[in-house]
Image 1: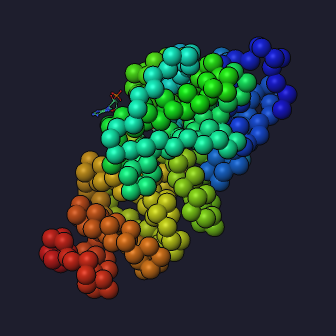
Image 2: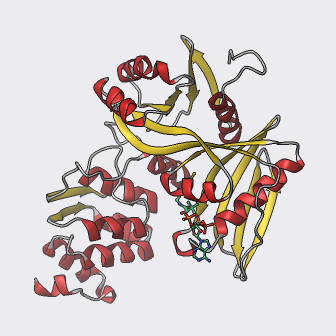
Length: 351
Ligand SMILES: CC(C)(COP(=O)(O)OP(=O)(O)OC[C@H]1O[C@@H](n2cnc3c(N)ncnc32)[C@H](O)[C@@H]1OP(=O)(O)O)[C@@H](O)C(=O)NCCC(=O)NCCS
């Protein structure tokens, strides 16, 4: 990659170095614009605006790309950037993220709450996990160290273990290990949810961050992928927004629903279209089901593929969709006939 002269890199260029090191990606400059070669089906490349004055020009370039391409714009004027990228024909995927940095010395390092232990290991990055006493992973994350910079990535706490301080412990452990390797400055791109946490830990917002994409995700590029790659696709999909209409009857293609991400990808496509999700986990799905009504899944083609490939998850999905009356009664009765032990919900009995 051609790059800015040493010492003149912008903070976002420094952040990108950590990201590509963490995910073992490459990047290059296209006509002076920074492009990361993500190479995922739903995100072949991500353009990153190192100067927000270029956002509109970059949006027009990204809109013309034939492959699914994303654009990230760190900005002091997120509303104006959202308007500009939409005008160029892009879809705003995440309007409310933040670009953050932190002087790492003196970072909080809380100890793990009772019942959890921290595990840190060094691969090409620093990896940290919080494990329960039963050995289950409750939280995980990583940090890439590039020179004096450390970039946090994939910070995640399992929904049932949230709000117990685990991500705070995780961040403390990652930063401690990074400082031991000589890192002095941290960078990260924060979700709206994560920004609270990081602020409490002493991180500062450099700018807001708008993430947009062109609309080239119009095939089912995930169907041939394994579970890990499908999960990566699912991570790249966009959830339901206020303007999305889900009312009415829908049909879901079940032929490729052989694993958990496959189910959520297929359901998102059925309800909202390609590149969309209606919850990436059952907990998220429940939240959306509770918030929306007036729609049914009239058909789940080849539902038995999921029922054979992942019986336990299928049973949970079935119970959840039935609980909210989403499954068409005939479909529901048909599935229940093949799985008498599922028990019939109130909706099914009415049929
Ligand atoms: C963001 C995320 C990592 C936070 O994980 P977490 O383990 O719940 O984080 P913590 O428990 O350390 O802190 C979360 C909140 O719980 C509060 N909290 C911590 N311990 C608590 C306790 N014992 N009781 C009640 N609340 C507690 C914290 O004060 C914090 O509040 P704040 O958000 O208002 O600052 C998690 O929600 C997640 O995985 N989200 C999806 C992925 C994501 O967005 N990751 C961040 C990408 S940058």
